[in-house]
Image (tube, rainbow, N blue to C red; front, side, top):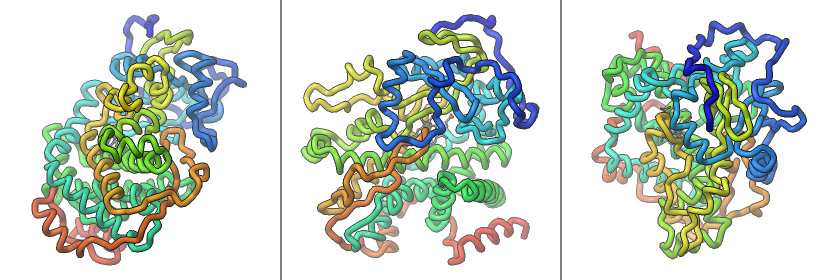
Length: 478
Ligand code: HEM
């Protein structure tokens, strides 16, 4: 990567509201050059065989960085090289996460309030640089560091067991919808100190955000905003021993709105990633005999198995755009100040230069190295990788322990991939197993296992969840 120059000058973030609303592009300068016929449209649905072949073709055609389209007429770059990706993530002074620096937005061709995937600006840590990033990240980081991980391990186990209890007698389940999709939402909900019933609602709202029905997506985004604003207002009124209360009391003195955005970021950054890490790991175990026997023979620990999946079948396909703060040459491409660069995690993991060094000579498996990019790198790297690993490893282990004779109930070719270019996973993972028995009554087990909860829990909510949730919020005004 060679910087060409703008004298180290940094673009100042233009406020999202300063730019004119989405306008008709009259004269569009080439944001990321390349013949239009040759440009890959990232917004097109994932082909049934996935996108791995696409990254390979792009690398062969363009080298380490390729021009792509984010939506019709909106260009960006896609970086495919492992070392360049690492270097970029570690140089926030050259590559900003603040999408208000994006030339397309500054010059009014794109409205940041509109959803160009992962480019909408939000007032949270993920979209901030430098001192502002530290101010927004430290309450999340310090709050996560206060969690009692031993107690959390018991809580995750308890939640995973209860989810398995709900289908174990049937002898069949969809491991995404019935399990992997729910577990992370229920865990995060416990970080907020709320009873599980709120976690089920959070799960429903998050799942809708990823639904392909845009009207329902819109509804769930509104629902989410309400949820977090209500949560923060409630915790501000009666603080507890939980992540939101800790963020509110943090010396960074975030506003209530910023805490609501931070809580929403915790949910959005963790839910689908963890769900599809569990899903992709289970799919690997169910379809790859070599990996399954290495794991069952104890040659491959659960954490090494997760790393294998995070290298080869990462739930994270693309990392959202960084904005070049000065002109820079990458490979043969001249990236201009203000250009957006997306990072192909899967492409970087398949960089031939990286794959050579990381196969285990004994097992031939790509394990034992945690240098994959699934948790990111640099100042924005995931502050909760230990928690993410805990949830994923417990989630996988509980399924293996509890579901005897576990097998896929469809042909692997029939599994449908998610259409998102950012996430990699299957929509459903239908399995069959020997019907089993639920654990002992949850109340007894919960008491035994969670004598010391990782965060304190509020009183149980009443039956009519949504109605009561509203009254819970309205109760603030009492
Ligand atoms: C397997 C599970 C997880 C994966 C693969 C994952 C991955 C990532 C990645 C790649 C980033 C960096 C994004 C970027 O640089 O643009 C990130 C950031 C973040 N993650 Fe995770 N994550 C996981 C679980 C979690 C959990 C459980 C939490 C919280 C409870 C969490 C909270 C966050 C937050 C707050 C950020 C933003 C950090 C910042 O911008 O400074 N993640 N995560």
